[in-house]
Image (cartoon, rainbow, N blue to C red; front, side, top):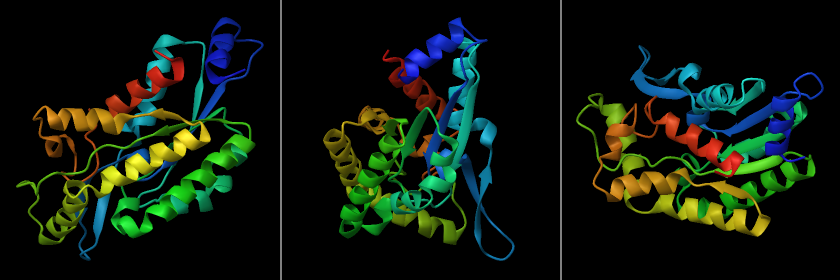
Length: 241
């Protein structure tokens, strides 16, 4: 049975069918990172709030739609994570749990390597996809959010402004666009379902909405409210709505 059939079977026959396990493999957004701040030692740290992460919202939506279906969530997001790093820890953090569905989301950190690292990103995604399928799990690749398109006046610390400036350049210069397009090419080659949230963020930007203000850290982490966009989009993709 596919994931939708398993959900329906569990909803209609709770006693005789197992629960559903969904694993989320990604970076800081997947982990549940929001604002950033400077520590006393000068390092940069993030605010973690797993209750406002998109995988938590995803589970909440299913608790409304299918109250008899417990969605067991494996949060395999790690701040700073990239596709090559995700490949390295795939067995440890995801496959050993035998998930029914794996949602993969990488690109925000990968694009920091520039176009010269694009092939490494694509090859890592391809191997991640192959190994998930070989393990018998269903698979969705979810494209990430946009990053900042300007240097926000809300960022006061010089060190964080420098980080934001570099990330802003990767967004405005089309580097992240190139990574997302290459990821979708790999998905097409590997017959992987895509939940294209990046396309929705780009549409918001094209409409004149300031997407930088939709980021909790004004750099690359969506606000708690914008994490609902990921959750609803994933539910629509899973159910074929």
